[in-house]
Amino acid sequence: MQLNAIYLYVVTFIYYLMKKILVLGAGGFVGNHLATRLKQNGCYVVGIDLKFPEFNKSSCDKFIIGDLRRLDICEQNITTDFDEIYQLAADMGGAGYIFTGENDFNLMHNSAQINLNILSLAIKNNIKKIFYSSSACIYPKHNQMDPDNPTCSEQSAYPADPDSEYGWEKLFSERMYLAAAKNYNIQVRIARFHNVYGPLGVFNNGKEKAPAALCRKVAEAENNTSIDIWGNGSQTRSFLFIDDCVNGILALMQSSYGYPVNIGSEEKISINDFAKMIIRIADKNLSINNINGPVGVNGRTSDNTIANKELNWYPQTTLEQGITKTFLWIQEQVKMLATAN
Image 1 (cartoon, rainbow, N blue to C red):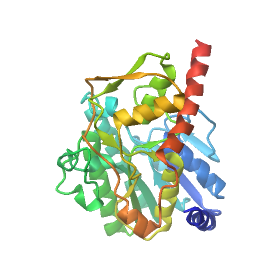
Image 2: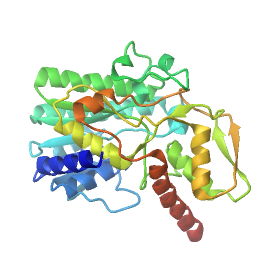
Image 3: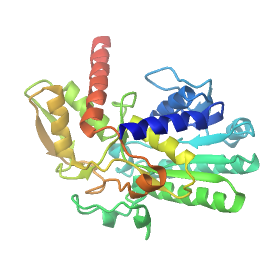
Image 4: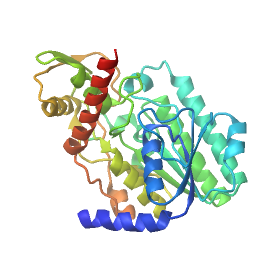
């Protein structure tokens, strides 16, 4: 695996050297990390988002604060200058944001409007290649009832029955990007992300996902107390470290594979066991209170058969390695906030 990683690094650097890249959603978690890697690979990187990254200075050569729901903003900035576009901008969040039902209209409207604008301008300006970040939330609920045996292979997406309005919008936009590829000769690359996590991600604003939320809860908890977890804790997930996610994006963009592909980990774990892992890393004595709350499907893990075959991509970071780095970063943020207050 180490030789494979070195080979991918060299090929990637050669591929990206001197390209002009537009990263949409560059102020978000994955977009921020992706922009940094693209810059390291020798690209000229322009980022657009509603906000700058929260925890570091952006690596973009140029960063534009703009609302991609507005067509005029897209018209001003999605031009013929770019070799490639990476579209990661979306209205999104963790289970507390997606599964309560309180944000359904905004989740669908905002993201769909962004994608409609971007694709119309990409077609008008003859952009040759575009990446779209989809989600494992497009997979049918009925294939994810058994926490021990979920089915998330790419071909299982149909008949469609996503677990949320967020998933429905992602599936619609996948089809729109594929239609653009068919009708307008745009090279489209689509990744279905599975629970990406790591340092520099939100952890306390209500939109954080399970890894960041659990790390924050453990970091904040006094020793010999407890933390709350939504659901009975038997629901399973796999979690992908951000460095592996970025590697997967770059491998996909360099490939000739033009259909949706899973970018995730196959290392499945229950939420209770995941919490216990973080508690052990923190070296604390904490118990778990399972309480009512939004949980999503009972089981989900990535099926990387296509990614392995078509992209020669394999995650390099174990869950324990990645969550240790993430916990230590969040623990430091929690300490800084406590000191500031």
